[in-house]
Every structure is written in structure tokens, then in C-alpha cells.
Amino acid sequence: MGQVITRLAALDDEVKIAGGLDINTSIKNDYPVFTDLANVNVRFDVILDFSHPSVFDKILEFALKTNKPLVMATTGLSSEQKMKLRDAGLKIPVLFSANMSLGINLLVDLVKRAAKALYGNFDIEIIEKHHSQKIDAPSGTALVLADEINSVIEQKCEYVYDRHSKRRKRNSNEIGIHAVRGGTIVGEHSVIFAGTDEIIEINHRATSKDIFGVGALRASKFIYHMKPGFYSMNDMFNEL
Image (cartoon, rainbow, N blue to C red; front, top):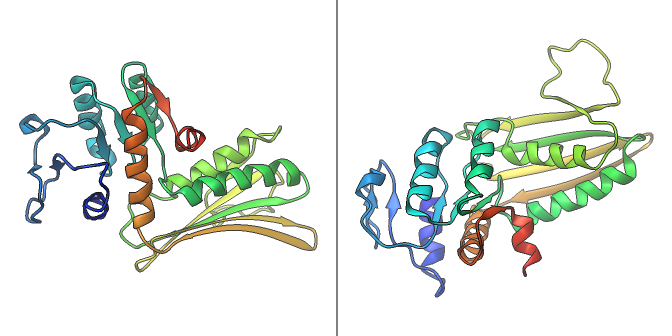
């Protein structure tokens, strides 16, 4: 994603990359790449993080220390880490999203509407597919979809992540969540509403990582102008 952001930023007159952070400095860029946040010596306006949960604390600490807005696009964060982001929003502007795609956020809205109309008569299953190198499973987006469905129905559903260990019939208050890993799949998410004699399926398929880069740069522009707070992609879209 670092190289995707680099390429897209070069085509955008409104943004300029001041510097990068990476343990790998072999790729040459038009900006300095630091291996340690303590060595960052460039001026910047916004921090955009597409990395790994293992460096979350250092990134957040750096954002708070420098008092700069933070766009957190790293997936696989724990509940504790997400709570820390919310707390940081009391001091700096923070935008967090498990998926930076405009299409995915539209999918979330459509799925919520469908769940309100169909729950009780339809079973709900979520299937996500990603490349073989993705570490976390299920994807953060799949969990967001499940959480958003749960937020609009009266009886909260249990998440069932695999059925091979459950030798029983499916309960009506379940949301099945299934992960597929293989090849170079960029990202696919499907929400299936299975009723009696009919099936409704809402899908999103990413064919390039550029969609995440475009969304991340737009989020960076948005958060730069905001007051301290905890923001989502929906907040950004509401400003358009």
C-alpha cells in the first residue's frame, strides 16, 4: 500500500508525501523513509498508517506526541487498540476504517437496510476472500459488516466463524462469517440473505488496491481540517 499511496499522491496536486516509515528502505522514493519514528525530522500535517497491529502503539504515541491528525487504515486491530483510538480522539482528530473503499462503505449501508427489512425470515451469512498473504481472518471489513447488521436488529446475533466443529443445525440468531485465502485476491465481500425459496446476495469486489489508496488520500485531506474527535468514512462522505 505504501507504493500505491506514493503513486497516487504523485498524481494529486493537493497532497505531498513528506516522509515514510518502513523497516525496508531498499525501495527508492522521492521522500525520505525512516526506520525509526525517533529519527523523523521532516514537517508534516497528517499521519496515514497502513501497517501492522504490532506497531500500533508506537504510531499512536507518535501522533499524540506531535499533535497531528491520524488516519488509521491498518486492519486486525484488537478491541483494546480500537478503544485507544477512541480515547486519542479526545486530543487529536482520528479517522479509523477497516476498509477505505467508497464502494465498501456503500455496501455497509445497503446491508444494514436489507437486515432491517429481512431479519427474522432470512438467515445471514458473510463470506470474505483475500490473498494468501493476508494475516488476519476474518477480515476487519467482514467484522464491520456483522457489527453493522447487529446494530439495526432487535435480537443480537451470535457470530459463528466456522461450522466444522459444531455438529448441530444452524440457529436463526447466527451470523456466519467465513474467510477464504488464496492467490492474489485483492478483496471480495459477500453478504447472503437466505430465505425460503429465495436468496438475496450483496457483493463487493476489489480488483485493484488503488481503491483503498484513493480513499485513504481523501480521508487524509478530510481529517486535516477536522477538530479533535473520532471519525469514520461515513463522516467523510457526509461532508461531500
